[in-house]
Image 1 (cartoon, helix red, strand yellow):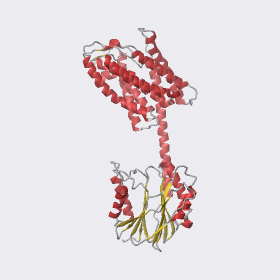
Image 2: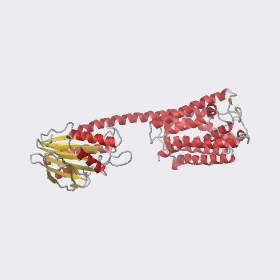
Image 3: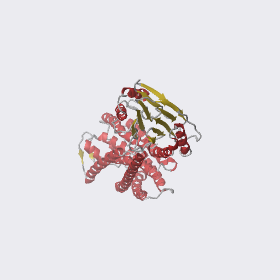
Image 4: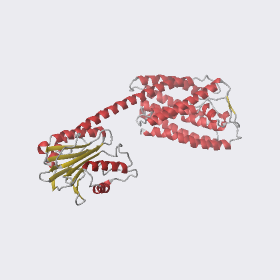
Length: 524
């Protein structure tokens, strides 16, 4: 459920817009209902009584009575900018396994938006401002608890996760009640209690035994302790001594904690970037290695024109094609497709390559070639498997022999007739049953025949509407472009599928794609 916190945080901004509209309506109804400011209490994550700030209800002019109020606007604007930047960076470098940056950005934005900066920048009315400020005050703990969940986990018996989930429910209920009662600060004491409970829950989870002690965790603990002490003093004092003015040290604790959080977020972000760079480099190395196991150049045969295309879905893939050249007149062609994608599939395809190389002694017998590959792979693939089709062409005898292992059928275009023949001599997929048997099918070749071996990435390619390229599109292209050479046909088919699917020629398709075209005694 890693995506859930992100959805809650992002949907919050939509909620702000909707709630703002409701506030505007409530403000118009409350135009002469009195000053809600008299109903406010103190608090940190809740809010302190801003008795020194003069904000006229009937005017949109903000008057500053002290330097601290100017500093608050500057600081709030800075926090909003930091929050928006962090959110943009988190979305640009989206990592669903680590939402700490997006939680940090949401917290900074909310913390800044609940300051006088918004009132000053947007020149809002007093009633709107009070509803806005209290709503954000109630919501502020949510991204904080989500941030801690990303850093230290869901907590003992999922206590941290339950914490921000309960807070969201609390915000929804209190926001509704505040609108009905026309008193935005009605739940200030309840929110104080919620914050205190949250700090205790996070603190217990942060310091409980079993956590790995790392540098960033130690920094976070130190900052958390300082801010927790300041926030507890700020939230407990109104409950224990109502009306007693306490020096507001919560901002100091917050900035100490903020500095620690910035360190942790930056460390995790750059550590992730470093890991991403390493993985990208390793994938590029793997791609280069995999390219070495594929035939560098088409096999030179006097009576056969060959063309091959390999288009991986990712940097590396599980498709494979290979040639076993017996002599100038006899050639074996293998096309294989490993289940899955990416690095695991590419490793298995390397195993298939090695297994194919050992089949030269009986290259003229497709069924025996597949059986030999199957015996080598059995016991090594666990839940994976390989489909394959193997075609052996003997130009002296003008015959071809084919066997398949759970693979799409071999297609033969008899160009003089413009007719397509399918050969579906299939056995079980490779790597599952050691004693699996495969059967050959032999057919004659005439001048101009075109044999096409491929993987299911061609017929299973989809467009923006979700339609499959399918057998109809594949066969239609084969018959309508039968006059092209093997190379031009292969290039044209890949380009056609890319255009049809709405992707550029250099973009990967929905699946790994391999195509081998063999023309026997071409007409040209």
